[in-house]
Image 1 (cartoon, rainbow, N blue to C red):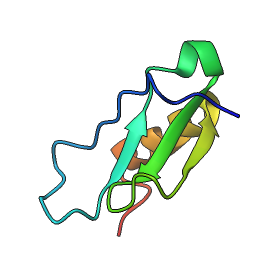
Image 2: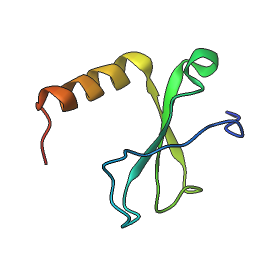
Image 3: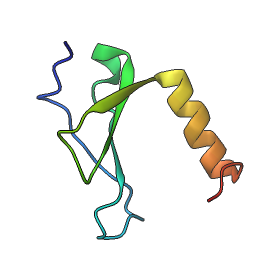
Length: 69
């Protein structure tokens, strides 16, 4: 079981106040080796763990405009 008590969850500053955002905890990357992601509407509903490599590829694609809604 993963201990997330020290996770510092954050969401994008571009997120609205609608409550339908994704939150990430990157502060555990060095210790756990992954970035944790959860739904802000249901923070106790579970999290997914994403490898650092996958997270970087995802965020790079967002910045490059490869992923659009």
